[in-house]
Image (cartoon, rainbow, N blue to C red; front, side):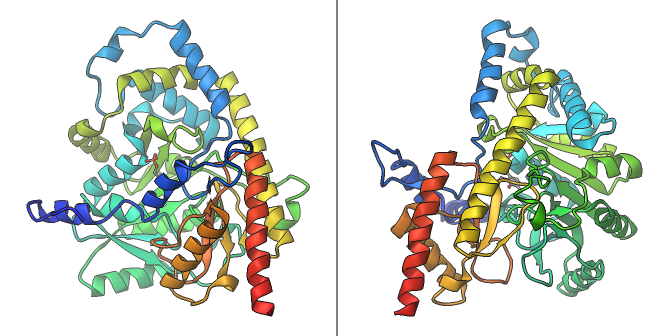
Length: 441
Ligand SMILES: Cc1ncc(COP(=O)(O)O)c(C=O)c1O
């Protein structure tokens, strides 16, 4: 551990807390990747939310831009810190056509480098240090750092009753009243509610009627509701014959952007990023959409340090304007995502490992509690490492998701190829059979 004694309090805390606990092991795994011929015993990292399913298709389209077009002059200069006007216009049109299905005003958008930066900026502009953001558990561990490190906002993991078996959320609104009372009793303010739909890690979605009830409660209590739809177009085709029976009476996915357009409240906000649906986490494009003009103005005034490079904005604007390409891209992505989901969950069903049915996202949330030596966080860590040691398949560790049920793990189904998925399933099968064999002996 480096000496952090000459840093600020926040600097010293940052020096001691990695973004996530699995980064070191992930780097090691990336140095020893599986290859059928050259490294058949290599690693299969399924812990980081990367989407590699359609990169070849997108790469080709991006390279067409860089090959055939001259870089426009504006790209070399400073532009609006909320995003170049032409990029905001193209993105507004993209959101309108592909996700919201209603008009989107380019001036209601503000961009910065990935959802990470957008979450940090929004939290700092909406909440005071010491205020609390409520997040239904389990949820994305990195929210803690994004809202906490610089904005100083606290995370409250809202525990929901029931196990993991449904593909749609449906919690009682009274849970929000209870959370508010608990937070206030500790001297803090319930300032923001953060929902992720489709969710990370469960793949669940929020139904429109449920979202309306939650939005109405938030507006009544003057609490900011932010819906993170970073996986909004990572939808699994639940009408597929092999999946239908896992989804009795499914509600359609309706983007929160559509409700916001109707309600036009200063308390309702939306996050998106190109990292997941487009699989370009390295491009660092994230956005806030809000009808709160002061928030957008504050974002512009304070966000100059987080701007996306104009070169990135230009290239992606060219791609976003090609709706024929986007149509075929998202059609292909849905087919490949659904196929990956079917392959993986079929493997789990064969092994009789329970999982939560996903409506979207890049994940399967599965129950390995049967293999825990101890029902505790350290028991989970031991199992996670044991699986990696014996199979070289790296799952996401459970730490930081904020839920209380022990033994559930997240698997990313889009970070490896279909043939690698077969290898991963085969190795997991070996692990499961070995463990079950041991417990029978
Ligand atoms: C729910 C959620 N929000 C935000 C992020 C961060 O996204 P970005 O790479 O755009 O910063 C992730 C990445 O996994 C995520 O799952």
